[in-house]
Structures are given as C-alpha cells and as structure tokens.
Image 1 (tube, rainbow, N blue to C red):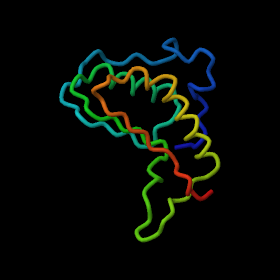
Image 2: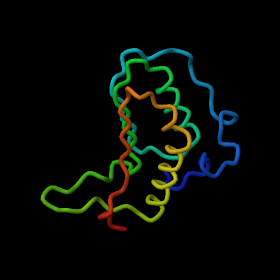
Image 3: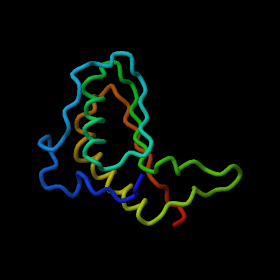
Image 4: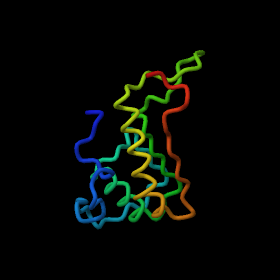
Length: 123
C-alpha cells in the first residue's frame, strides 16, 4: 500500500459526499468493536468509516490506527517501529480527515480511539 494517497479527501476541495462511493444500505447490528489499521485520508476509507458509524447501531468502540500498525512497541525497548517521513505526513492527513469528516458523526455512546504516531517515533 503506498504511503502517499493520490485520492486524499483532505486535498479535495469538494471532500463531502459528492465523491464518496455508495455503500450498501445493510445494517451491521452485531458489530461492537471495529479497528481499522492503516486508516488514511483516502475518500473510500472515509466513506467506509462513515458507513460503519451510521449503519452499526450496536457499535461501542471505533479505533482508527493512522500508524499502519507501527505504534506497536518493541519488547523491552522504549521506541516505536520506524515510520518514514511520507508515512508520518499521511498519518497527519488522516488525523485531519478524522477531525473534519468522522468525529462529528460519532454518537456519544461510541468510544472513538485514534492511534497516532507518538513523540518517540523514529524517522
């Protein structure tokens, strides 16, 4: 998966629903915890996340990992796995997209967790 997203919703001035893909109208009543590892600012990722929020009435926790799983710490070492400069930039774009397009749609009963690169990331 490329680090830089060519279809970032953050860099699209019309980043609302006009470019989002249509998703099924099915509800997902059994989902309670959802974790998306590798969350990015891609339009289809935002559309999928919004679909999950809107169609999953039983949702209790939504975790969006912008580090592509790189926040996992080495055992007995206080540092993260290496993230490139491009990956760090995409993680920031993902965070902006979450603020703009996701946070306001999350019901109060749902715990939204956002995993971001920490201050100790090596790049």
